Length: 293
Length: 257
Image 1 (cartoon, rainbow over the protein chains, first blue to last red):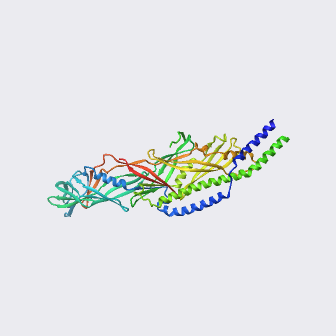
Image 2 (tube, rainbow over the protein chains, first blue to last red):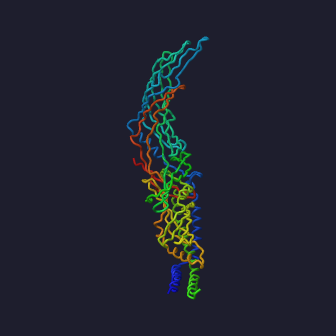
Image 3 (cartoon, rainbow over the protein chains, first blue to last red):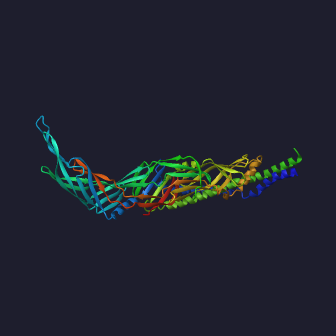
């Protein structure tokens, strides 16, 4: 009985294998494989030139292209605001408006004057921008123009006067400032940062102002040029920072942190692009709940 | 050796000899059918990609954002799946060991290369495996993730059989009977973080410098009107294209506020 059982345990597994050995190799399979490989080679040859314009920049782990639409939306939203006025108030004066010096007889010093803003808060005004127009350029990004900007301001004028023996500061006058421009405008500056693309809409063609300076000894129109960063912000790259890898359905979960260093950004015919390397830092393994869809 | 034992050994060898050519041929046939299914999937995917790219899709017209992730970065994600074990319900006590998973990129769907082996309960037999798996990508912008999930479709032993290794024959036979459903609950997955949305605010600098003639300037506080709240945008994945340099994800961006 024992010998029959031993024989049975050896025969039965071998017999069980046989029923499943059906439908085995045929030459048709080889022909089908060969035909499919030829078909795929032809398809890849067709696909290659179609795909070339969309390939990433060699050497860059990640590259993002994004439409310019958000920047256009910023301009249009600003145009929809009720208030288009820009209030200005000086907090620091630098340099001077004009100066004139002559030497006194030796050993005396010099005599003359320097015209400047009377103090740090000497200037105040307001500029009103009717509307911002914009278009897109592959060279400068969002190119914008300020339509019909007008403004008014005032500046208290002071002078530093020397008369061979010493000098003194004097508040000596006032300048009315008028502003207006039909061609003020600017461009977009972009810079890649870790989080994405930083953009600035910068006024490069300034709003032109004229200060009519009048003093007892100096009167002249003095130009002022108002330039500013109209707005700035960041468009994030789509790739986030923290991700995970699940090893088994439950249990071990490995988390990682992406270190993305975008190092190149440029404009496209209808958007912006940024690219750079990515490194992966694995965090200590922990058990956790399974990933869910 | 007793007569009974000799007889049973002869019978076992006889059936083994009979089964061996069939078993070897059957394994080869299954490997070829596995390869045909992979090639058909690949051909269909390349055709679909070619049809889409032949329309010359353009930024801002057909998609709003294009994210390219290189193949090297994706394989660095998959390095986290190296050396893990799947316990099988049958054969009882057996296990599949995935030693390495990598994507081989080409123009068309990437080939998922899985180095795996199967071991029986007592760990006395180890059989190399050819694994057919599909790679599924699923983006969930609300959660801010894209998941790369492998679904194992078929496992075929890749082995040269010997009639003198009956345990191997027996184990391979059991493996051949496995269905893809046996692997459905053993899904490794990787999550790639993708931001779901972003705000755009009208942010200004508090000061600017006003040029005063040729020799002076004024630093001024400027009160430029700003938005009451930022503009809000949301990404939505619309298409994934696999090329020789990695994955290309195309998104639509919708303004939500």
